Length: 457
Image (cartoon, rainbow, N blue to C red; front, top):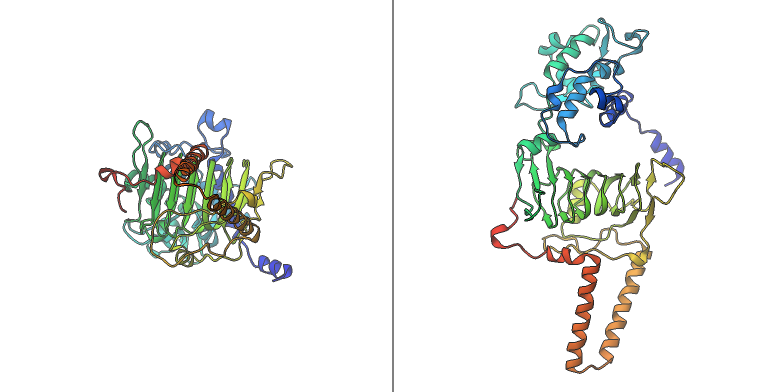
């Protein structure tokens, strides 16, 4: 209720220091450096790293965030550095490197579980790394000593190198060997091929994923068990209207253009990167954006939206739609209508003194959004309602419509005049549809021919 209470609560929060070090270190995965491009090494490693060329060649995926082979190669090539980061100072030489007798603490291996997990057998249950490492039959291989409660550095490193494999539930694996979903139409005359795949039939609950790439010039609408609790990755979609009306675990939207995304409640993070002229309508726990231009966010969120680097002309507006199952889906993801910080974004990376990287949508430009599909459920209005200024603007617009209808009624037009007037109004409306680009949205809502229906799933 008070600032003091907020501060007291904030002081109870913390992150594990060793995990945070690992988090910072792996950001180098996406570093672009002249040295890397010239000699093919990952910078800034002091060692010669040419141990895993075969890993990076396995994938045709050029997006490093999506490329599990790149992740595996990076961890493999930098494993010594990662372990040295976690060593206690007395285990390091004067030049801050490990020795043959260096010992790794249990706390360090617990921290490494932030990056690595696995199974004792390929089909078995997934465990964090530290639980596997402490399993009695593996002590001889990974150098764990029950007396000192530590691991031998060189034995632990050798064991990890021998066992490290790619993520079987990652994006690359999902695209390569996941179940293909025929949710999208293939648009004739384009080289773009829509690709939609999922691993929900084989992945553990926390690893379920749906990957959607190159959906082009169409409306795609789904409310499906395949989506429930899934991590959704959307890539290179263009001029499309995508409705994913199920409770989602997380959503990443990358390199999309001129599209609208209407999402079910997102339990964790909704992140956009390198998108242009995108509209996103969602209830989410966290929104973060980077390198976007001209994007509009109609958001209900209990945390401050994070504006990272490289954004231009960002617009925030109140959440302005509903569908029948929305409140049920919000309850399943633990999201409520208060607090709602849609209008209080935090500029995390201020690249210059310009504060106009974002704006709040003026009420005069605000319209509610109607989801044009029938579903069963109890939600009949926008959860939490609208801020008073936006509700007032809608009321004023409704008043104008009523005045207009009254003027038409009082004009006492003849039957022929009414026909002529109707044609004029429809022509004007048609011009407006074309001018605003809404005609494509309406046309794409027409059900496809029987032979090309979107598949269920």
